[in-house]
Amino acid sequence: MASAKARHILVDTEEECGKLKAEILEGGDFAKVAKQHSNCPSGGNGGDLGEFSPGQMVREFDEVVFNEAVNTVHGPIKTQFGYHLIEVTSRSD
Image (tube, rainbow, N blue to C red):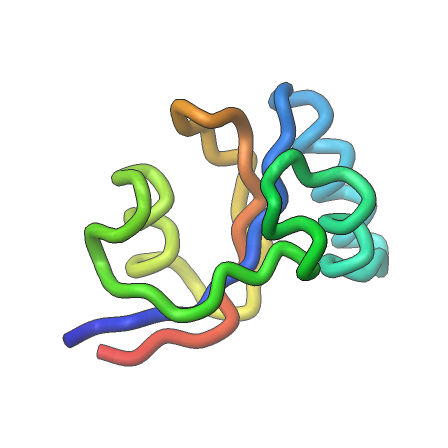
């Protein structure tokens, strides 16, 4: 069964999400940005969500994690929880 490891940053607005993505793309450390800004409890762990399978996260999250490039920051991705930056750190089919 497919599985993936990912980390994310959750914020309230698309604008804030875009600013954080720009910071990371300019060389900012994803884990540090997550610790400073993420609204999710995983932020304290650098945004690390551990390993999970399809269907364990909300649909919008799964679509990115199981279809988009690994080791790339994706987003902003809107879900019922807010706006996410998602980085897939590994994936197996």
